[in-house]
Amino acid sequence: MALTTEEVRKIASLARLRFTPEEEAAFTGQLGKIVDYIDQLQRFEAGAPPEAAPGTAVRAAPEDDDLPRPCLPRESFLANAPAALDGFLLVPEVRRTSTADARQASEARPGVGDDLSS
Amino acid sequence: MTCHPDLWGLPAEELARRIRGGEVSAAAALASALERTARVEPLIHAYLEIFEEAARARAAQIDRSVAAGQDPGPLAGVPVALKDNLNLTGHRLTCGSRILAGYVAPYTATAVQRLLDAGAVIVGRANMDEFAMGSSCENSAYQETHNPWDVATVPGGSSGGPAAAVAAGSVALGIGSDTGGSVRQPAALCGVVGVKPTYGRVSRYGLVAFASSTDQIGPIARGVRDAALATQVIAGHDALDSTCAERPVGDLLATIEEGIAGMRVGVVKEIDVVLAAQAAAAAGEPAPNDIAASFRAALAALEQAGAELVEVSIPSLEAAIAVYYVIATSEASANLARFDGVRYGRRSPGAASLADVYFDSRSEGFGAEVQRRIMLGTFALSSGYYEAYYGKAGAVLAQMRAELMAALERADAVVTPTTPSAAFRLGEKVADPLAMYLSDIFTTPASLVGLPAVAVPSGFDGQGLPLSLQIMGRPFEEATVFRAARAFERQVGWQVAPRFRGAEVGAG
Image (cartoon, rainbow over all chains, first blue to last red):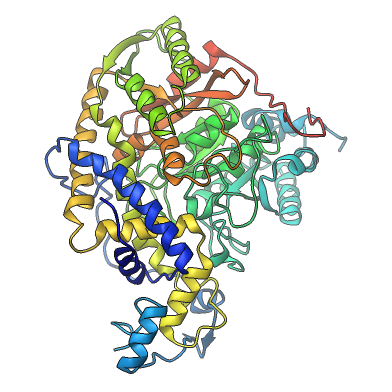
């Protein structure tokens, strides 16, 4: 099936990615071609539905007891954070955008202004 | 210690034997490896970083341990290159991505720790396709790696850096990760041995995740014995990875020389059909006769070594790429959600809101192929398409698993070519993602079903580029796969000596 630019925009928004119009056009063509190829799956007879996660020829190890164990110290973890303050991760404020701002923003940046800003 | 200029060319097993016995020092072995690396690296660009200082300190530590009468282990003083998605405390790790520029590993992967516990010397982090997504190493955000056999061709991917480094003689062992062929395909294109162990055989703790239902860590070596030795070292249960199986590894070298007289080897009858379809899909190029001819020669060699060939049928083989690119991208879209500019990695400097942090950091930090796969996976999992894509792929995969397991009841091992072509030219497939994906047609089934598989050099194409045979086995029967691979290697028996064709400077 061919993908529309609108669908690509929607998927990009779900994936928290944004593209320039040129990138969007390129992705629409490339993804459409790949999805066309994947559509050959419809020709294949399917066996029984997979009983476990795909890929696992074997069952995973049995669950361990849920006991506290040593883990990475907070400072080691935060050493790789782009911004941290008093032992916590630091991010810009989650801004509530007005409807007009959101519409404008979603045209330029698909996805901004929906579930993220509420 | 006197200079030992040729130590770089020794198998890991032999090098470790000499170092454990005090015949040569780990420092001399490392010096030889670093000299060789300095000579070949300008031709192939396999490394993102060489840990020279840390490696020298480590080699000195091994030598002190030997001098004190201790045994550093089966990889004593052996230089090893790590793919840049394996954590080693205090060292940088980028996954070949801009989004992880500046990340420093806060802990060590279990597989890497086991290499260290066995005496290995880690010499550097080697190039890879960004987040292990690619079949040519051209998706690295940092550099292109060249194939030591012909520097105008790709080394394969995504573990192209470790494969090129091993083939060029820079290190005896490379450690990569294989999600759909990322160890086996570059090993094939570089004329070396590559291993994808059984799913659950090697702990993934400390490996940056791509597709969690198929990711496995595996070694690259110049010979089958070294590949088995390295697998032996890194395999086994680990409480830090709940998908790592509690099954004994056994001694993978104990039976490796026993030969394959009477072994039933399954030959997949759909291979010619698949090769023809692949060639047709690849812009109407003629069928790659070299691959078919080389595969027939490999079958003859197996027969000469005493194997009994049996025909097996895997009708779903043709669907492997379609299944793989639904399942792997779906998992990748979830696994890569963690790269959001908040917890680690690069945050877009201009982001004013939390939403901007997510959108800008990911859009600026991920390269085109990673974005493409995240998009594809998000699509396959999205409302309205889930059943038709992710659901259908899972159902065809169940069929594929049934076919492969049935084949492995009739046969002790199943063989295919590792790749549908030899190394292709740099840039040749960059503009056509689907053509690039098709490089993995023969390697994806073992990944999807979780089987162990080894890629072994099998000969050369008309241009003198290496070709490879893939041997798959039953889950956790690595010993059988290695035994078959070793028998095949002995039968075919060519010495690995890449020629660096196209390079100004001879590096032989």
